[in-house]
Amino acid sequence: THQWRGIIEEYRDRLPVTDTTPVVTLREGGTPLVPAQVLSERTGCEVHLKVEGANPTGSFKDRGMTMAITRAKEEGAQAVICASTGNTSASAAAYAVRAGMVCAVLVPQGKIALGKMGQALVHGARILQVDGNFDDCLTLARGLSENYPVALVNSVNPVRIEGQKTAAFEIVDALGDAPDIHVLPVGNAGNITAYWRGYREYAADGIASHTPRMWGFQASGSAPIVRGEPVKDPHTIATAIRIGNPASWQFAEQARDESGGLIDEVTDRQILAAYRLLASQEGVFVEPASAASVAGLLKAAELGLVDPGQRIVCTVTGNGLKDPDWAVAGAPQPITVPVDAGTAAERLGLV
Ligand code: F0G
Image: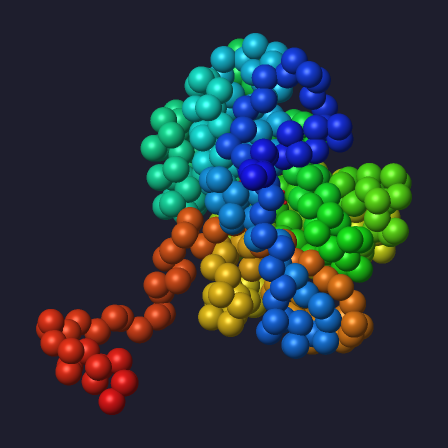
């Protein structure tokens, strides 16, 4: 029987490791590519969801983190540091445990989802809540890694991008070729950079016949690439992508331009509508930021930008359980009943 071995073992020949590299893994990757029936009907296309919430810590960050922590260990680091809107810190904290390292985390105060904070805490990370936004946290983390013995594991670390490109490999391996369009949320812009690298690599080696158009979506209140300038005080309910000055900005524009793609924005309202559609009609529970990809696809379809018959993959980046507030908010309260079958049947509308 075969168990998925994690992205480094599965794609070893395409990653910067050697035979002696000490691999730190939670067997990340190998995530489901789920056909999306309702989205396919709505767009007249063949739409799939790459469900990255199925990774060990519940987000795509694990793909990059297995590489970053593995290489940090190889280089003898004893401590790692990251700035995060939540998912990177959860992932770094877990992989640091596997590697026997100290993990330091800088998060914007009051702006990360409770589930993510719980992950960093339970894995024993040293957490500082910074009185500032993500961009301030990243500036601080970079400075600390330059002046103290601590390795930076944000996506400005190039091996993170190497790990994350494996998601594109998995999609081509599953579909037999690249999709026509790939849609994903954009925050710090590392992931769109990584997918584009993965797709280009497979096309260059003839494993895929072409590369997809890359479509990235930012939240309207945090859309610096769309605006063409940094956003000083970014806001959105999708806290994971509440970023005003993305580190991989120019690589995201490169992915857009080289692929003939686009980077656009979606409102919080559109994000929440897509979030609810995914949960209630596709059976896939994601965190709000993840729904930006699907919100973007639906927006583009409404604008007539989606020709029917295409094959489209939307990455949904994180698990819905990380930020359950939005699932509960606005939903009807469950009804309390006595231990009585008759009442239960009546309240369930069975009689
Ligand atoms: N979706 C989720 C759930 C995320 O956590 C992030 C980024 C993104 C999308 C955007 O990806 O930054 O590569 O463009 N989260 C980072 C973090 C910033 O700290 O967890 P990106």
